[in-house]
Amino acid sequence: MPVNLQGLEDNARKTAISELQACMTDGLSLSMSLKQAHWNLKGPNFIAVHELLDGVKTRLDPNIDDMAERIQQLDGTAVGTVEEVARATRLEPYPTNLTSAEDHLREVANRLRAYGERVRTAIDTVDEAGDADSADILTAASRQADKDLWFIEAHRG
View 1 (cartoon, rainbow, N blue to C red):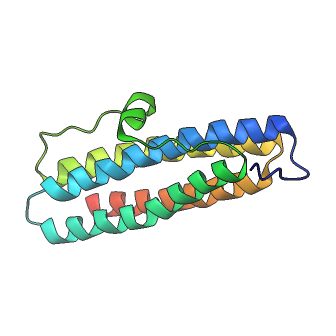
View 2 (tube, rainbow, N blue to C red):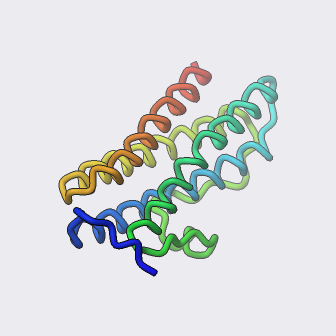
């Protein structure tokens, strides 16, 4: 049964679903990239980077979940299968041949930066369409992505 939220125009709902799905897709791609890096890095800073990447993923995943749940509240369908994420993400494919912590940190930083940019664009689009609640969810995701990018870049030196 549809939730039928009151006070939200159909255009706002459709725009929010589309933007949330795009951000969720890129977030899922980023989350999988973080695990790829976490599992395969080596080097003198191994444990610090290993734990840093786990922390980034731990903070990213609840934001993705919030996006998916908001899509449901708006009567959409959150699509997060590996196949659909691989097809739809705007993030570059994560290289599978890396081992050095520095290479992984560079690649993760690039993806965090792209994800943050995508989410910030979605904030403006959703807000202009009239869905402040979805914009709030995206703002929280953006704030966390920026903070985690700062952590990654600070570690890189």
